[in-house]
Amino acid sequence: MADKQTTVSAMADEITSGMTLGIGGWGSRRKPMALVRELLHRDVTDLTLVSYGGPDVGLLVDAGKVAKVICGFVTLDSIALDPLWRAARQAGTVELTEVDEGLFYLGLQAAAWRVPFLPARAGLGSAVQSETPAFKTVANPYVDGPFADPEDAGAELFAMPALRLDVAAIHVNVADTAGSAMVLGPDAHFDDLFLGAATRRFVTAEQVVPAGTLADHGPLERAMIHRLLTDKVAETPGGAHFTANPPDAQRDEAFQKHYAASAKDPETWAAFKERFLAGDEAAYQSAVETWRSEQ
Amino acid sequence: MSDVTRADICTIACAEAWRGDGEVMASPFGSVPALGARLAKSTFAPDLVLTDGEAALVHGIPTLATKSAELVRESYVPYKTIFAIVWSGRRHIMMMASQVDQFGNQNIAAIGDHAKPKAQLVGVRGAPGNSVNHATSYWVPDHNPRSFVASVDVVCGVGNDRAAAAGPGASRFHDLRRVVSNLGVFDFATPDGSMRIASVHPGVSLDEVAAATSFALAGIDTDVPVTREPTETEAGLLNLLDPKGLREREVSA
Image (cartoon, rainbow over all chains, first blue to last red; front, top):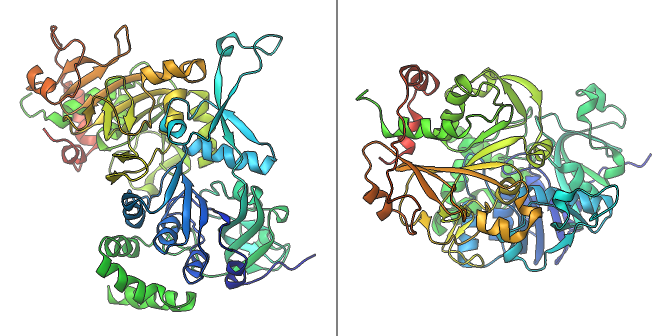
């Protein structure tokens, strides 16, 4: 059995300019932030981000790493809008393909199932369609015969294209060395589909344990990321900070507030970056620790 | 009942949106709709289903002050399974709207040009899918000519005109119910699916409503009913379910 352990830094090495990067989690919940922070230091550019967006999107866009974002929102949950995202959008510095949250799910599912699209009602008549002319509709083929539903005889449906990813990264509570992984918080969100939609699949974890021992750490039903979905795992405690990753950590609301407040003004944002984001992950964690002791 | 506030009236108007819905998921956005859904469930719509906002359906009727740890969760619905509910139609959402137009198109994504907006808002979120799959209502706490607009800048929730134009794929389950604002209640019971004033809140004049609306409201020149006040039982429940008075902070009277 292959040992899939590696480092966050080695994962970042594989993410190169122009790639489409899928980031798991949801809003300010269970984001692979250690990898995001590592990418801030790399000279990678022109990424396309595919994300149920949170601070991952705000930070990478602000750092000039991103050409395009595919999402339905970028939120910090307890704060409606990531201020870095707001600023970039209002400056027109990032291209946005906006999709309905459910269409986003179908796009990942289509890629994971290797079909070109999945149909939906969602999107029809909305700006999702009008703002992105590349999106197509498909005619319901069941106009007669035993499977036809007369109510939908003339229906055109939204054809959500497969969101194929070059790389996907997720963050979990526990992974094993063979690449299985367990989400112990309330929701694994769409992380299995991000992995399924990607060519190269990375899992970062609070803790990496010997292969086959995940069941010692929680109910087996929580180990919904099996090793057929993953290529590499890396241990990075606190790697989701400041986003929520229960039971290891609740969202660090105080720090998130500090992030959001700092990001609203160029001067305070420069100071925030200098203090927290200039060094490596260990430096970040230690700077946060110091900041917390000052509060 | 002289101590009835505008926020109380708005809450009743929101609660009324769910009357007769039966066993569906009620998804309220904003304190007033959240309180309205709880009031409806406490009284005339007992089968409504509420969520914990995370990954579960909740048992009973929590108040707006109930802490997450105190909720009784009755079943597990992680985010992915919400779409099975959305697309099945067993849901009535009340979203907020930064802009809503004459045919009930709603905008929560951006003000101005989508490519470089004057103001970035929360994004389309689930509004496109919600509005063409299940009952949809809106709550606008600040009714003014910039929120009730002739035409929205970015169509998130789909209105009657655009649903019809997109054909049965969009219109079959499209079910736009009502818009509640701090000035009145509005529905779409018109031949062309345009917005009509259904009732005006006590103390609000029709001139005020017309002046705050950037398009011609159907029915504004008729004998418009007044939005009902809470019953004595409901007034008691409002205070019980919203002990901190969150509803008052959301409504500009």
